[in-house]
Image (cartoon, rainbow, N blue to C red; front, side, top):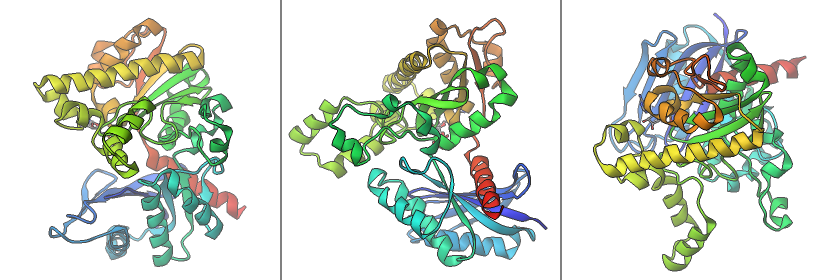
Length: 396
Ligand code: ADP
């Protein structure tokens, strides 16, 4: 029997969770999710060997929210799924830590107030993250909780990389380029020394390509520029998010289409990107398999924008030593990786086709000036580690 850490990632309609045994480093024990919250909830969990550890489907129309999901999870754990291990802390993925939270933090009343104040900056994400924290606090008031932020890793960017050319008073009210996916980048930065020493100490671009997609330029494993900004719709086009957009388009849509903020939010976050361009799907697998010219064009745009951002981030770095692919697309699509690598030929990248087809991990040729790697994302481990460290330093 050991102590264990519960890691929670609460989204708008899902609650992803992992349980790690409190070892050094934390050891994965269980992982799973409750999906379809509020509509048709279903639960599935697997153990460390990938074997099914639990599953359940609720009848359609069941209104299971975050509170019910966490309650179900706790009961499931208590009924034997934890195999005698004891949850001693909960670590949460939290979208926004503002400028204030540059690292993970133990959650108390004061922190909670500060996190609530950030809700207007990320109204589609933060409320769900905070809801999970509040429900856990109600169900287990003595359980220490730690917030781990997707913005923290980007606070090392120079000031110029974090500003907008708006009148200063808007920065005073929090309008900055914050950047997101920080826990994914931080994990990659933490394993880089074991993978490629030159990439770890040099100039590396990490491409986190999933449903959400962004890129991060690291010098000596510290962020110096990233493609997401004030919000998570900036930068690369994504599954359903538009990516970089001329602000003049927004003015036009407001004037000519009478779109208010909520309508624009739906358009830009949920109806755009690969889905909007293809009219078929937000899923790269579906688009790659489709004979429709619009699917091909959506993927062309995706790769083109990644190529443009590669150039921009390489300029911010003053050169390039390595590219790392991560996220669902980055880890699994040899086709997209090959196309992106071709965009980086001018930077000195020579793809090893066979290694890329085999999934890496190294996918550049030995004579390539820029190294390319595939590294699976592991934000959950990062959260478990932060939770361990925050609590152990509090106990010292
Ligand atoms: P999220 O941002 O929601 O965590 P993921 O990192 O799971 O998303 O990435 C989801 C994306 O990965 C989808 O577009 C999916 O099509 C893509 N993907 C997963 N497996 C493959 C594959 N074998 N080939 C191409 N794309 C893939």
